Image (cartoon, rainbow, N blue to C red; front, side, top):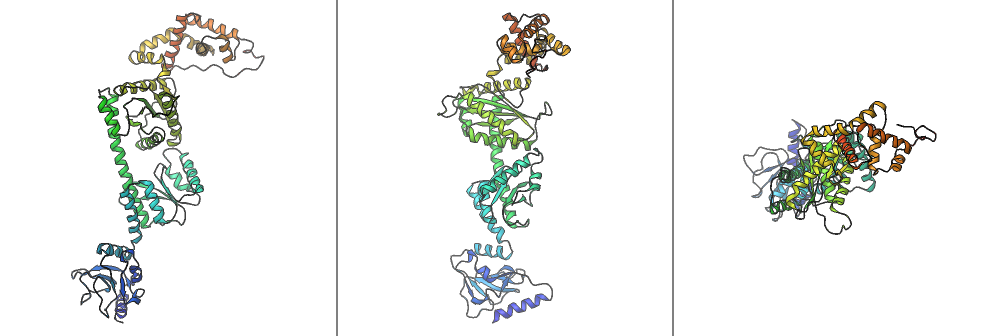
Length: 555
């Protein structure tokens, strides 16, 4: 037949110069979904003829070897050089010079040509993956939807993680695989915040393959892919399509988050600056951001610190972004209508009044529970860093939320002065500390002078003679001047406690038995703590029977 000789001649001619292209058989092209209903003449040419290129019926087009000619106007009288088959809608003569594929009238040329080109060029898998992922991006289910599509395209269970090893989405994971993935993540996080990805990819996951997804057009890491099954080839075009889709989705999410953060930041900044914000404007803007502040809120503020470097402010944007992602995750789960922002090294959260159904717990108590959850989540999120949180009282008036933030900031400052890093401090529990702190902030020399008049002699005596006068007076005042309870708490005989109280009166010139002098000593202790003066704590271990302490030796 004519078509067989034509193919043979062309193949022989090419062998003189270079190896023949592999190409794709017509039978595969005919089986593409875009060509459903197409007919091949002659029918037995499907496995005999292989196509390496697709060309249009353009006289000025460059010749291609082993080409499939797209002929919209019918079968041409003269075939361009290199054509081994034709695709058209026209009727086929009885004995065509080369095989002819005839497509139905309802097959769009764009779909047909695109499908054939992708298949012939070897990009069918990439096109299939891009098409599946494009549908997900348009539909908008986010990273979880991309993971589902990736699982279908790759034909294996998958998990997709970000650079902080947060799971963005999974598909087809069994409970055992989910457990092994979680164990691998926890092991990597034990290395610290700066080395999560390296240990994770090096250690891997038992029975799985771990790949970093990057796009040639970007230096950004799109994500980390974990697959169970055959090891994916780094050159798999489906992986490239997946990396591109993830970058698009993550940039879209970053844009949304950054836009919301800017709007939140503007509102929080106005409240922090003490600017007058009308009730209507504040409530309307907050609702636009998903928070209902019409019934007021509790303010929660916090700082993220390195406990090994006192005063060091955490400014690494990667750590802050990771920390804020986790914080938003906790809020979405436990307080979804909250307003949260990171402002110049300070975490600021406004917790609107909760919905009904939580009788028995005040707004402050609910906020305290949330704060403890945030502390618990911080350890594994940013290992090695310490989060300190402070809470205001509930402020009913939305226009006074700026003062609620001030209360929380004051409580935070006092807590830091008292060495309560990594804890939750409330405005209510600061008591008289807040009065002293305001004096300390404005006139620190007065606090220093008051300390010298009250506690300084006791501190110097303890340091010189290794006694415990400061610890004794602190415990005695905390226990409402109960001598027996103080002795029991300090595992010391009552006579020793009486001796120490007498010595305190001599050194400080203050009689602890008098109300006014007790108040001065109590304020002196608070001033000492605000100034950061530390004295060794009193002995807490119960001495053995018969020791000097048990017999009431004076100290």
